[in-house]
Length: 176
Image 1 (cartoon, rainbow, N blue to C red):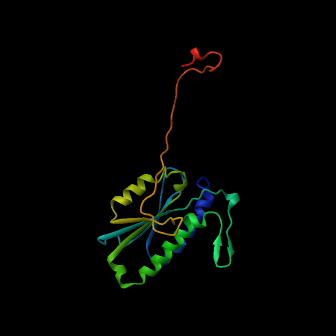
Image 2: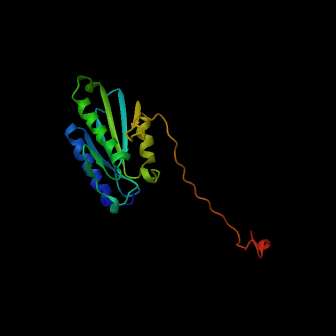
Image 3: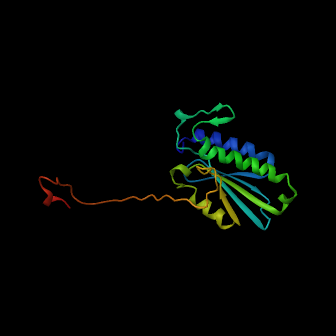
């Protein structure tokens, strides 16, 4: 979950371990929320830069962890939401890096710890990376397995009201 630093650290380490064989530069990017983002970079000097993003957190808490195999499928909390997208991304990068065309393209992978709560700590990092990228892809799978070209966003608002309480049936004239 987004508020589980130990679980986020476990996922962070697992993603880093799977990216390491690609010989990319891997770094932790400190964020105000405590858990760092992971940033992997390959060929930053290339004229064409691709940004691939994902997230470590899930809406599920530690008590709901645990995946299981059912035949040829992996089933469990967060497996379709983002963990499957991360697995596809890493497999695609492994295949891409084995091609002769790889030398002409730079890529960055950013994996954040706070997407499920609206990215309050990583939003600025994501904006900065997007500005310096030629194209970007969020590796979260679509419900129907297709390519998502746009999606509704999220807005977080805080409303503060000042006044004086009054009962609507007994003394509404005292309210403000």
